[in-house]
Amino acid sequence: MSDTLLERLKKLHPQSIDLSLGRIERLLAALGNPQDKLPPVVHAAGTNGKGSTLAFLRAIAESMGKGVHVYTSPHLVDFHERIVLAGPHGAAPVSEEVLVDCLARAEAANSGELITLFEITTAAAFLAFAEAPADLLLLETGLGGRLDATNMVKTPLLTIITPISIDHVSFLGETLAEIAGEKAGILKPGVPCVVGRQETEAFDVIARKAEDIGAPLHVAGRDFDVYEQQGRLVFQTTSRLLDLPLPRLAGLHQIDNAGTAIAAASVVFGDRLTQRALEDGVTNAHWPARLERLPVGGLHAYAEDGTEIWLDGGHNEAGGQAVAHALAELDERVPRPVHIIWGMMETKDARRFIAPFKGLVERVYTVPIPDEPNAFAAEPLAEIARAEGFDAVAVNSVPEGLLRSASRGQVSRVLICGSLYLAGHVLKLHA
Image 1 (spheres, rainbow, N blue to C red):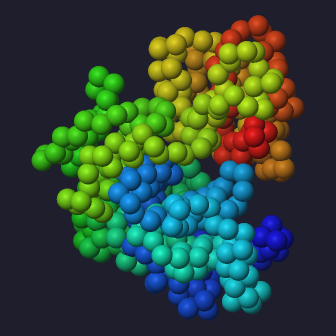
Image 2 (cartoon, helix red, strand yellow):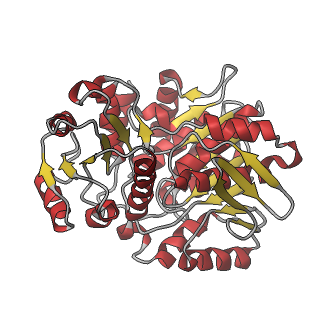
Image 3 (cartoon, rainbow, N blue to C red):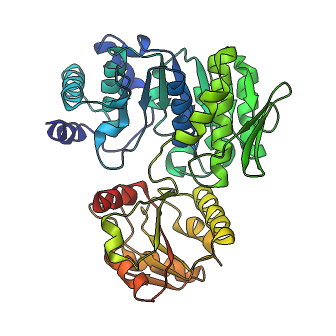
């Protein structure tokens, strides 16, 4: 039923997207402004690390016994993943009954007017969040910040800006400064903001905006620091030193994300924040398809026995750099031949994404992304990889890529990467 509704709502999409708040303002007003009736909100923007940071923060809050709603996008396998509701038995993706009810009410209130799918589903999510009790709502922007539908929340408890890099240039701008200006649009007067590690060009924009409106900043590298030391995560401020386990999520970039979440939790919970909650938070956070090693399942049937299959949905230059760095770390500890199975949307800069893997991988297998007309075909993507110096072969599917990798007779480490849409397809295949 929700699938039918979502397909119908897609037809209301404007011919071209002009980022603005007019459509969502109109719809929310018709729904009685549910965005003003939400639990305390932590609003996160940034190019990379938003979801992982919120996953850490959710795990910390839930360890303290708090009920947490979560809004993220896109989903990997099922739309319900985007709207997670707190409940007496823990948080869970929204039920079909509640989702259909909220979507139907949003559709009726919209009265056939043009609106993007993200805008109308965000309005439906606000209905669901406003009508279910929780202690906290973790709200992730969809695109940018300033003109994002989630930015209708006027008085969040806290904002977070994770690392900013070049992405969505047709909507947000072609420079770090322009993109940072859009992301900094979630800052609110008097509302503290935790700022993850940033390039100077991006941070300067955030700092100016914060000073202009009076938003206090808690800045990575200035007000807090986080790093790995002797197999532990160390979080430090001028008044506090925490020694914690390493995050469950793999990669050095997840240490930074965990640090941002700890800083955010320190603002949200103050003296109530416990060492135990932080330990539970960093070790229990779960965020699929972010350098996730897949447990033995359907895809292993196509691979050599003992092959590691890793999955990551990163799709921009910074994401490629982070994953390549993590692969290099893995190879230092347990050396194995590395193969990549790569699919990507044509709206992304494929060359900049794949370049950081140079010298790390033996072969790249490029694949189309099923049911995504705006994805690269396999051969043009392989040509990009070859131009960057990779041994690249175009194949028809992820299973074929695994079979071709296995035919080399090596127990290898295979990374499937390049798109969250590809990651969702892979998780369906692997189930």
